[in-house]
Structures are given as C-alpha cells and as structure tokens.
Length: 123
Image (cartoon, rainbow, N blue to C red; front, side, top):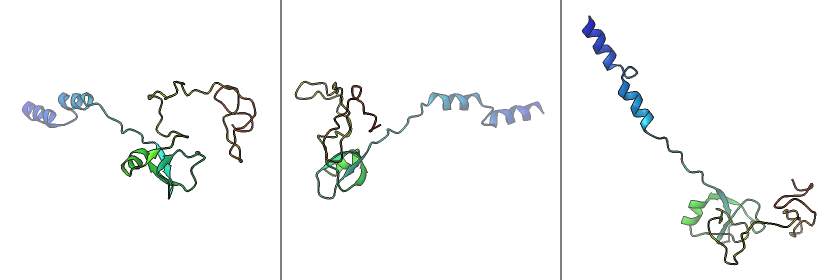
C-alpha cells in the first residue's frame, strides 16, 4: 500500500518539485509593442496620426512600412529619433513658452503655455 501511494505521488505533475522549478526558471518574454504609423496612397514616407502631411490614412506598423520601402517623415518623426543626434547639434527639446498645437490654417498656436506643453484651448 505504501508503494502504491509513493508511485501515485511521484507520477502526479503538481506533486513533483522539478515541474514547479522548471516553470519558474523560464523567463516570460513579452512581444515588443509596434508603433502604429500611417502611409498615404501616393507618398513614400510613413507618419504619425497627427502629422500635417498625412492626407489619406492607411494604417500599418513601422516594421511593415520599412519592409515596403517607406522612410520616416522628417516632420513628425515616427519611431522616435531620440537616440540619434541631430545634425544641427540641437537637442530637439522645445524650450519656448508657446503652445505646441497647430491651428486649422496649419500655423503654430500663438498662446503661451508651459515649456513643451499646450495652452488652455489645446489640451
């Protein structure tokens, strides 16, 4: 009877100490989040959602856009160019006290705001 209980305990997966340690040793890897970008019917660049040069929106991701031969927009800079230094030597951070929003005319809002932020009308 004791042999039967011993065999039963060893054969159960939840009772085996080796099975629990194996699942803890394997780290779970998360898939990297791909940024959604947009391409146009006629253009050769991909853009972020709010870019002023984006007219017709065709949704894709950066990896697929690169494979298709598209290049990033120089205005909205999808994919983040924070690791690449700019050619002018400037850091790319906005230091003015103006709102960062673009008006319907396509010009920059003239209202004051905290640095790198938006005014009361463009939250």
